[in-house]
Length: 231
Image 1 (cartoon, rainbow, N blue to C red):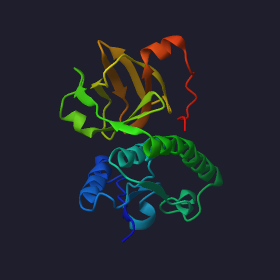
Image 2: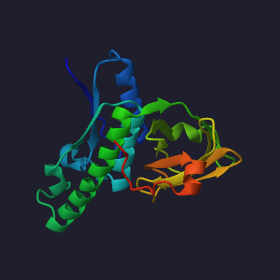
Image 3: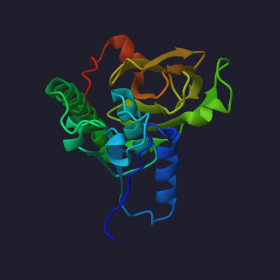
């Protein structure tokens, strides 16, 4: 076997966290050098199972599932499927306007993945410590997946919240003074430095990457964040 693929399709019957659990179990069951890919759900499951109360994943949920895979070590991402963007349960042919909307959303993920692939291929993975803030209990924090990569002098913190409520957490970073420099998307995540720790709030069923740089570089406005990792 050259590649193993996880294809959990949780929407709407299963929690989003099942994607992380599925990938983690698969990763632990194969050799460390075996590539693990994730096939992310991008279709209305009612097309196939005929069960009521089905729906397609939202754009935020698709991004969250993507991040759940990346934060748990997958080597490749694909989406199922292009043809099903044209279909919904009970209707073989979808409204072309709806298809264009859904396809435009999928295309938005490509540049984000390109940036993240540069980080994962060329960056250095670094440990960070995540603790719940006062607004979040420790049990809820189990819905948070994270991964930190240092690349080109910056620190990129990938975060995915698979839960049903916003998560407030405090993150201890590498030694040194850091400052928030931007986000890959920005709608789902907010962060600020407080007393040497990074205070983060991330929206439910959503994901994003927070970019930090050394505080002295931020003060000097060394390089405005462009939304792309440097090669």
